[in-house]
Length: 78
Image (cartoon, rainbow, N blue to C red; front, top):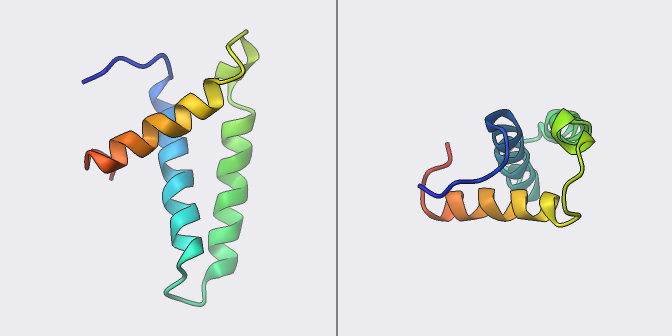
């Protein structure tokens, strides 16, 4: 397992955001309103997470997204 500097709850929120976004992109049901609301909530949770209050490289958010994508490809995401 590779080390990453992100807190677990931030990674979990990004993982949930990615899954929700993908589900919204390919809606199998008519519940898109619920998915949009969930995506908005997760977006706010990610944007205002205390981790970002400290100085980090600007690429940190992109690094977080790439970490989650890599984990999904490896089959480690739920």
